[in-house]
Image (cartoon, rainbow, N blue to C red):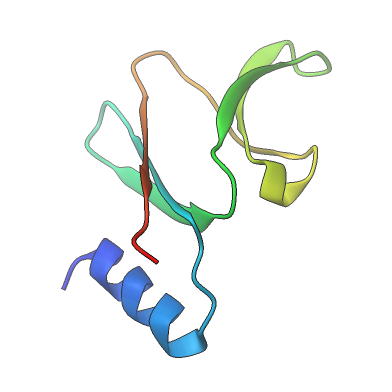
Length: 79
């Protein structure tokens, strides 16, 4: 069973459907996945002077630092 299938099962069982599944693909083959109510965005963080993946669900706090070569894919979950 894939991570996406497990996350879908957890959403269904806990009755908390989230609108989007987000995946960040790294150059070394790793993948980070999370669900959110809003689409994430890549924004400039003035204090760190770097790009970060930001998600409105988590407030103004960035989710992770953005590095060259990363790929962010967002898909809408079926409700």
